[in-house]
Length: 497
Ligand SMILES: *[C@@H]1O[C@H](CO)[C@@H](O)[C@H](O)[C@H]1NC(C)=O
Ligand SMILES: *[C@@H]1O[C@H](CO)[C@@H](O)[C@H](O)[C@H]1NC(C)=O
Ligand SMILES: *[C@@H]1O[C@H](CO)[C@@H](O)[C@H](O)[C@H]1NC(C)=O
Ligand SMILES: *[C@@H]1O[C@H](CO)[C@@H](O)[C@H](O)[C@H]1NC(C)=O
Ligand SMILES: *[C@@H]1O[C@H](CO)[C@@H](O)[C@H](O)[C@H]1NC(C)=O
Image (cartoon, rainbow, N blue to C red):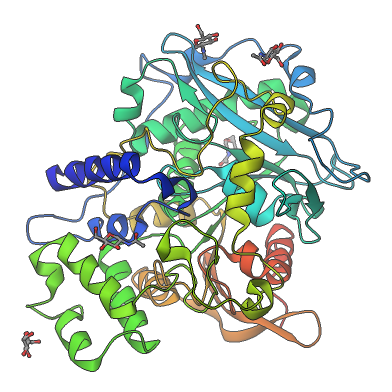
């Protein structure tokens, strides 16, 4: 715990002195993944959902009047957006604690066709501390992509609002445009407070958008949201009563998410070795059972070691070309071929985060989004530099998965198979630890007639799917496969064989 706090403080200091941090795709997730591993001193620790309605600081005390706010939040038009936008967009703040002055920012893109009958899907990015709007909506599954000029938007042909009404929440306060007037909230960020605030957000948001009450509702997310998503689902189930049952939660989708410290760790070592990123000798030393792994020494040494084995590649997609103009060397490549072409990844431009940074820091864009947290201009960053996230020592989501399975939620755990931070091996080891009976054994699933999208196993209570050729951020790298997978998931159908 102490080490973890020190680590976070160090990264905050590092961020402050390193101007390139604003473009860094994520916080150093890998260390956070490893901190979840239990050890001799660290017993596996479970998570307990907060009981909202029985506490003084209860979400039900934080229900605020929402009349007229839906109309206020309507986006007339985003600067530079394409001409033919047919769906409604909203964004703004939902106060989750008026005394502290804490408000969460959301962006909502309604379905491009038949929004009245399509389900509602909430998307959460991880980090912890990264923006669901700037990363999730603007570089992954949202309706637009920012162009290299940082000023115009193009349509994303694989946007998930073709199959759902898509809600992006910047969580917790201190991330993206979300804020608190009580700065100590930023130091008290942890899984409990995040789940509580996200739940309070939902109760208020449904009051603001009452037409979505009782609508089929799904929660999706990636990376550290491997903790956020099951935790929020667990909180919804635990606090379900006659006043809250309009949250018609049907299922969850988790992509390259952390699940269980021990298996996440072992899966990484095995992935790095089996993808020719580490020598046999180093593997023998670092492997899970090795008593003299640098992991046993300390987490910093272990990570420095892992990074030195792999070299300066993008650990979130080991085969991607890096952005040549990126200020942070870890994301840069000396190879100057056409990045998107060489990537072979359905045209995803690895410099996109830089374009998003420019776009979201344009005052007229912030005004159009109603994102005026303080006086304009407000400096938006992809991952927060004000938050110090406290891990609460929780190491595993396996018991939470068991509760979600018992509640008969639809669960899809998917994994882009070229990510080295939360790799597919980690996800498989973690699912294996659940010991679920197999209902349909491993099979290739198809995106259309000729393209194998990945592989799937249907367990009793949970579907596992890989996405071929995708890194940590599946909808960026393989947008067509990601959309197909989501479409089948929302329809409650197995991926097509
Ligand atoms: C935070 O403080 C500002 C300035 O006083 C105020 O306008 C805003 O409403 C406060 N935010 C919340 C959520 O109360
Ligand atoms: C909440 O409780 C109601 C009434 O018992 C039930 O019909 C509904 O399915 C529950 N909601 C969830 C998300 O489990
Ligand atoms: C421990 O590390 C040393 C030196 O790095 C190596 O020679 C030895 O084989 C390792 N032992 C085990 C059990 O992996
Ligand atoms: C992660 O942290 C370790 C140790 O602080 C560092 O050596 C490594 O370069 C970091 N990786 C990235 C991708 O920033
Ligand atoms: C903030 O947003 C509100 C509502 O959209 C608007 O009335 C106000 O002028 C904005 N303030 C600034 C500083 O842009």
